Length: 199
Image 1 (cartoon, one colour):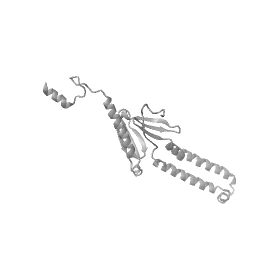
Image 2: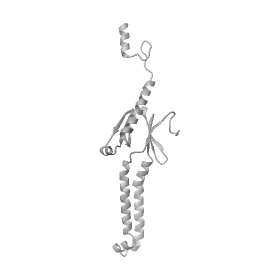
Image 3: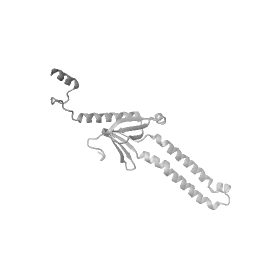
Image 4: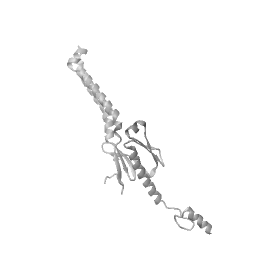
């Protein structure tokens, strides 16, 4: 059993954020590669001598600068976003909703279902096309928390709602009920009215 699981806690769902968020990073990465390839082709000896004759000494430094710039931009945006997506996990258990991030899968966010007042799914039009969405967790205490870009929002939301309902019902059942005047526990309002008429 993983160390981050509580006693008798069971995993219901384990998934990554929706891959829709990779569209822009991959597009930018491809554009950078194509632009870098075109620039490198222009800096080859024959093409370079045609449009920059007499500046042959600058060709090799220009090659280095173009390669370094493309590599830096690729790491700064597309590669970093893809690695962040690959290292993110949403884990729903029967007690908590966890968000794990990073190459070592450290738990960054812990949402205890017993502390959640309302679970609300939200979809923008682009998310609706992909079937993804955000899950808003309105807490009894503290600010609202958002689990972004949940895949298969309807199914994931249904599982969260089911687990949350079970937790709330269990907490209500464990709450001691107030004793009535006769010392009995759990007397209904109808029974109380009947007792009042008998006395």
